[in-house]
Image 1 (cartoon, rainbow, N blue to C red):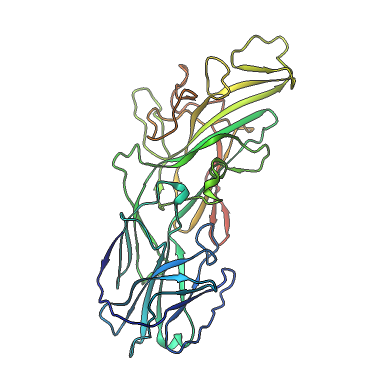
Image 2 (cartoon, rainbow, N blue to C red):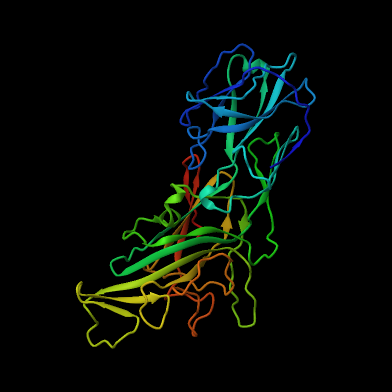
Length: 417
């Protein structure tokens, strides 16, 4: 990570301590240590960084009587009692009426991100979420301007704000008595893979993101993963988190991506026209219909039907289309989605397969992102009578969006049908 500094480093040999406040209370924990500077932190509840799992962060401090920072990017680490310490401590500067404090976590943002902390605010340039989504971390930032007359023996409060957007994908099949949906992969496609974050101390709650424009607007970044095993959507109306289903490595975490606005992918309406670039959710899945009885009465032999005399049922392979019933076959389907993400908000995309008015998505663009699973069992061919953008079954996937604030405030978005 590249660090720009506009500072003067001062050598001090005192102790800096930090106490964590409970995330369910706004009470401050007072730490009486004379004029030594100590801190407490606040953070909204979140699936990500919380006051319980925050282990370390970088701290900067500038006093009005100093030319530069007297706390210059030192790492504060948590001890067994929930206190945070750096290798050095710092006394409130003589004659300083107020101090500005900056902090952020995680402390290691990689070698691509340039962090600039100065008197004008915080900047994180070229921030890139980890391409391995199982390693993505929640970026939190804090700022406070503290008057010495208000500090006394109290701990300085650092209010951390979540800077990224949290994304969750869920899928369910309400018609599970006759339909089976197996999901083997899920990806968010054509979104910006990096961005610049700036924060003005005069607007302490504003987190201004400038997402980078993909070099090829049709094939921006994609985030997701595929499963090692075939996993079936839960047989109830309760949503099933596709990401959590696909791997245990996520450990109940979700995607952490750069806040941005992306229009939905728009397929050409007429032959000869070009598609309009945009975002979509890509799924690697298989859809089957299960019916009682070995065969339909009066039915004809269907190469895509498997008979199961032992269980007295038969299974139709609805997707993907192959010459014969192929139980290991999977195909790509997609859902065009307009993404509008804000910092510190969680977005849950609920996908409904094979419901009353929903099918299994539409055939995706011909050009798919690089790095997707391939093999003889993954069918990319589109039937001759179908085109990209046509429904895989009778109807596309119905979906809704829930916007969940990390303060546990949940709001349904009525604009998405």
